[in-house]
Image (tube, rainbow, N blue to C red; front, top):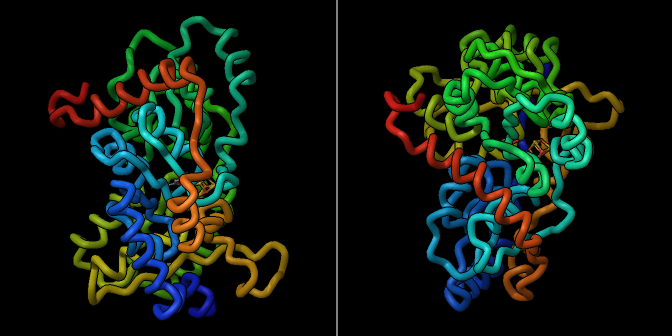
Length: 338
Ligand code: 13P
Ligand code: SF4
């Protein structure tokens, strides 16, 4: 039997501590003409000061159309880089420079270039969770929210190479029927979800819908009522007649789900606690990179206009094309998706 306490996400910063800092952030936002973009995995108090909270696709779309002078990107480094690539003339800051990603780490640009050199017919599709240098080597970028659509639109006469998430790549192959060569990277947080624990949750809560992120393992996806990006999870839970959901992704998403789906119950899927540590200290359903950001660091990066994302002009120029291709395909009416 799963301890339900284990299924609860980390508590938010006490409102009395968050309120004065939030006020400072709103003042700085006005002074700087800044926009605050936050990923669905950010802590509640950061989500609550953001102008837009969303998935990687929504955040890239917001970054592409913002008229702000300063972009404060509360997520991880590759997301802030994407905002900079789309806005080379703007200042892009992030709360913690060390907010990386295990998928990005798994795929260094020189190793990708070496693999690409083995087949001139490769057409490279990169999940947005990669460095700007990797994006610069690719034909198109995808997010979990549009990967299926973009792979369906890929040229039929090319050999598809999908980097760096093997699990998302497998899922997209299952959805589209397109064969792809897959890079062997993974999200260290999502592969912590194991079939046995999710199955136990399903048995304990038979009325609950199981909602799984496609970065999860195939055996876990097989238990899902819905496999989708974090933004689509919100829409699924809003429209589903079910009252209870087990959410198999990073626990930060629970804040929005509770706000936007009142009267419904959300449980974080349990993970294997491989180190046998008390769950108060080992919250494996939290991404340690996303959770480096705090409200205090958001305020400080706005005060100091640092850390800033800076990229070589040549990388910006080459990485921009596959991102713009993604945004263009995503904006097409569904019947012309290709
Ligand atoms: P989405 O919010 O785009 O589904 O991405 C999940 C993720 O792991 C981002 O790092
Ligand atoms: Fe990367 Fe996974 Fe963290 Fe997302 S949740 S930033 S994919 S390590």
